[in-house]
Length: 228
Length: 263
Image (cartoon, rainbow over all chains, first blue to last red; front, side, top):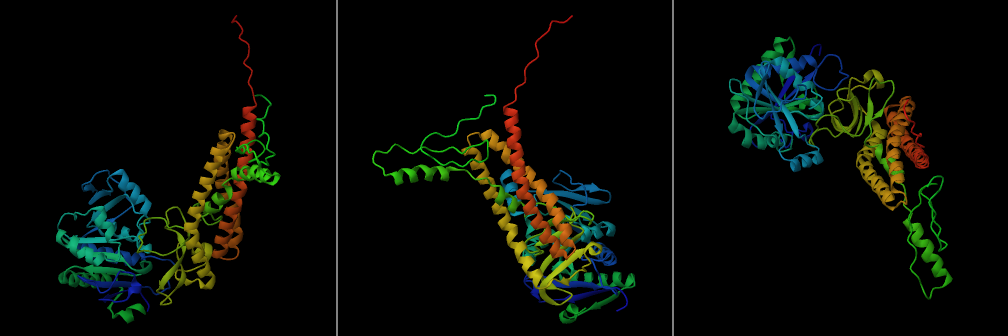
């Protein structure tokens, strides 16, 4: 291999990807991976791959994710921040906040909602919600719709093993079409598509944006994907 | 009170151990007895007295402290040894137990267990970002058997350390309650905790620097070992100094200057 490549694998089954029980009970999961000509020394998503993914995601969806790189706002609703929107999800009540601290879950989460690839690329490099330690989750909703309504509890539930089930039952009715989550060590991404149409268009746009940057693209079976 | 010490416990032939030169444990005197043998008297007087002697919680506190303090690693541009990740990591996320990381967690070397995309197997391995220049370890490098031992030691010490801190604090609180001079003992305890933290950081950094000469595991062992030693030393040094300062302050009188009518 002599250049960066991005791969996809539809309907993986391996539990070692750390994306919960597979296949998902509802929706379809696609694994996205990448490789580079020179062996990478650092963990995480390479900058050029993050750029491709961010462009692909923002071209088909509104991208909403927890973020720590903006100053939090003390409002419950969505507030503009430049061309983006942000919102704070807070655990209400002293007792519940103490309980959250005890459990080690965040009490205040700032959500960023964007259509800009520059902003979306930040989700792969946010130390507060580290992609490389599977501490990130990305909601993909209709591009022309307002940001999705979601509470903190529902968001945190997407980090659980049964996230695909919860996503389908709790988020699909609210206009969310897909969810992206980091897999093992952040070396792969798991894209859960809640509709067949969304899966189709997301693969097309991933291929387009990968080739746009002159990188290789391939749709692989799971075994070949693991050997990439 | 100037220049005087509180009298020690009287009678009973009780053997009382001091917390230190200035603070005595309170002892309960045995109830009067009408028909006791000499042995019974001896045991009933010495037994409860020794049992009442409050211990200092310095050792469990200092040992446990090593599981929560950020132990600096000199020459690494801000990396510290920690047993918990920075940033939000869900239970379904990373299973790493030993971290060398900056305050944000972005630059890190961590010891992990799970699927390794490089070896395509489940193993103990290092994950890193931005620390290759310091440790020379690329991402996904297998950590071997030593890594397995270190991974599990860190995993259990992370929880055991917190338990030890609670035990240490509890013992110290009891020692304050039971002391003949609670304020003096409280000063000692607080100073001991503070000095223990400083000792952990300083000696831990030294240990980490020495250990780094061997490997990242050497850094961790040197750092955590140094933190424990420095923490224990700091606790007792801090307590001793605080006791001396308290005695000095207690025994010092300031004589007001006589008032003189203004010109």
